[in-house]
Length: 103
Image 1 (cartoon, one colour):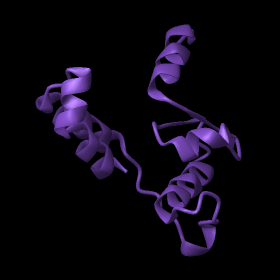
Image 2 (spheres, helix red, strand yellow):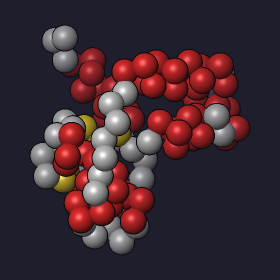
Image 3 (cartoon, one colour):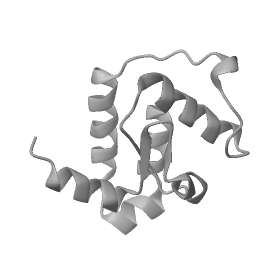
Image 4 (tube, one colour):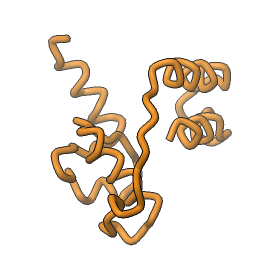
C-alpha cells in the first residue's frame, strides 16, 4: 500500500493539483515505511465485496488490522461508507476528523 500511495503522490496531476512537491512524497513514504507493519493477508481472507480484487485486498487488510479509517478517493470504496468497523472517508473528511480530534 505504501508503494501505491507513493506512486499516487508522485503523479504529476496529483502534485500539481495539491501543490505537493515530489520530495514530500518520498519523505511521506519514508516515514510510513519506518512505522509500517507487514500484514500477511491470506487469500481466503479476501472477500469479494467491490468487484475489484485490489480494493477487496485493501478491505481485507483493514479488517485484519482493525483499522479505524480507510482514506481514499476511490468512489466504489467511498460508496460503502464503512466496512466491518473501518470508516471509509475521503482525504478532506479525514482532515476534518483529525482537526476535531483531541489528540
